[in-house]
Amino acid sequence: MQEKKKEFKLYESVKQKYFRFHSYPFNHRWWKDIDVATKFPFARDRIVELFFWISGAYFEPEFAVARDILTKVIALTSILDDMYDVYGTLEELVILTEAIEKSVIHSFSQTSEFD
Image (cartoon, rainbow, N blue to C red; front, side, top):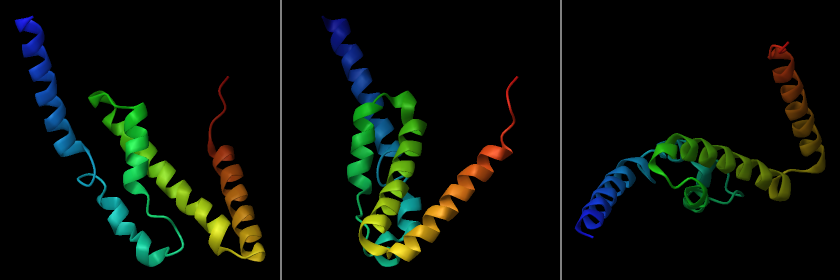
């Protein structure tokens, strides 16, 4: 039983150190640099909510990079979704959709084929 308590205390210590250095807002300076509130006033500022969603799926310390990447992807996707839902006119959204489709097609043509 004493061994389990030591192991638990060690785990908690590692977890606290990890979250001090790898959680919001320490490594999410990029979100502040985007300045969502000013540049995208129509968009929801949900970075903390999204980070906690991802932390629920990838809670182990070794998945810190996966948490960061998925938080960024979902946060930027959320802004894009808000553009479609709230901000853009039909004409603007048609142009944006075509640009995204061309970008995706272009990026697929850049990848090498596997034999």
